[in-house]
Length: 484
Image (cartoon, rainbow, N blue to C red):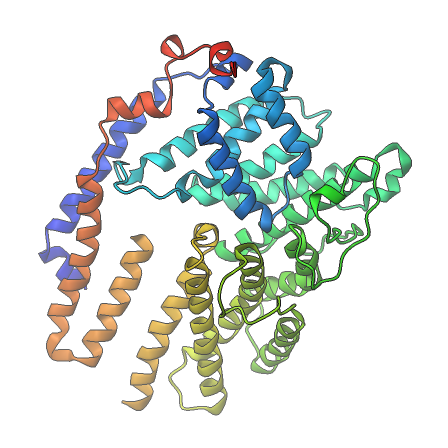
């Protein structure tokens, strides 16, 4: 494949062109210093119709799994923002910027524009994230209120979605978890007594559950141990209730697992959390090689957890009448099933004709195919948030290619690039006479993607005004939020 790449000059040439545009853009962005007064933050918000669409999409996707914001409390501040923007805290504006950053890339564009190899939507989201981080850095760490913890969770999530400094995200999520522990989130808030309202206690439980779930999956995707391993915690499971039931002075009762609520994912997911942490620790323990019997024991545990998941009133392969319920059901399944792939993969890669290796190949391939199918089911609902948030579909696709190749032996973009290359390699083994042709076609497929991006470049000067509004020409916040 390397020889074929060297002989095809189009791919490295278009890569260099995109890289030079990206470097030029970064230089332009670095020229601006952002001042963070309340009025200047308000100027970064779009018109209400645009902001409404972002907020609605955020609650329809992100808040169906992780629980960071309480809808009714958020809505009160949101309405106040439009009535009198100077009456809301700057933290509310930062939360809105991060809400937009979390879902900006989910909006479809008939003809998306790019700056280098990054879309304008992604660059806009990155700008909002950077503004939020600069604002957060100026806040006191001595007395952090609820909004600050919500902002910190949203920053990690938005970075994950937009692939911002992906090599650091594992460190940042682990730091967030440890600092949450230092603030006592790992202890059940009921120990604080009546000086903390039940509403605030439950919000702490939700944030803790969100932090540990987010950190664990980031660790799994990064191939690193989780900071949750060995963490003592007595925080109880979040209540399976609707947000309107959780008011300042109420004490709602948790609903049945069969009843879907926005907290269903966190409520159900807690029961398998310890198992998933243990599995991740074992998989990333380089000092202890896998023992096949132990893998089979863990497989039984995973299977039992999968069987315990609520059916959701029908097969997850049937019509997707309820997008939120479908997303939760699929995520609960995938986060367990991914371990079947990782546990059996080392044995499935073996070429020896052993019954245990054959069993692992079957299990690994079946789990990988099921994961790909589940993601396919989810995309049919128009919900792409999990594809941006997780990497297990990529691992599953490679396992399928690897399994097909291994079977042949025993019988005798970056992700797009990897899958394309793996597919070409497999085809070249099946048809040796077509080897050169298949490799060239793999490179051409990727090159076409790069050219599509290059042909849709946004003018850098125009992009700067779109993404980073110039304060001197912006509307004043008073005019912008005048609803009369």
